[in-house]
Length: 179
Image (cartoon, rainbow, N blue to C red):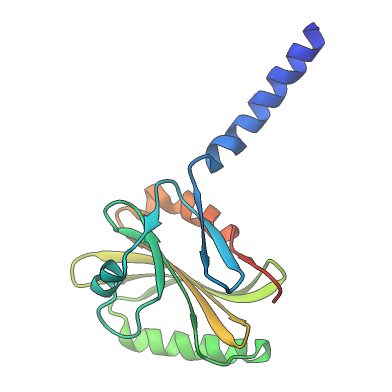
């Protein structure tokens, strides 16, 4: 009996951090696309109106989740760009050059190809200057079902250190079904 209690207590101590870290995260997906991920604690979906207000130029993402103040968000979408896996290096170079021209105050942290979930992705990590605040981005993209799947983990530079671990954990939960 005493050994069983000791075993149970030990298991509870080992599993508690794992269970607590996922207890409040929510799963989000692109409907019908087989793309899903877990968002950090208390992140909720942005409305179409919030998306339009946050991404005023260019082609806004169809989907985004964020913290209550919307100062940290995860945008995700499938864009109708036919990109083959063999072209990913060229696409990476194109985006690097384009971002360097159009993003004010761009400072690269990382720009590399990574493997995640059996898929090759481009990973960009950068800081930049926006009109009202400085930004920290983690951006991933990969060819998926004859389109370009994009994730953009975006936070104010001031808030990023407090949410960095949760955002990086969320990035690791991205799952693609039936590539």
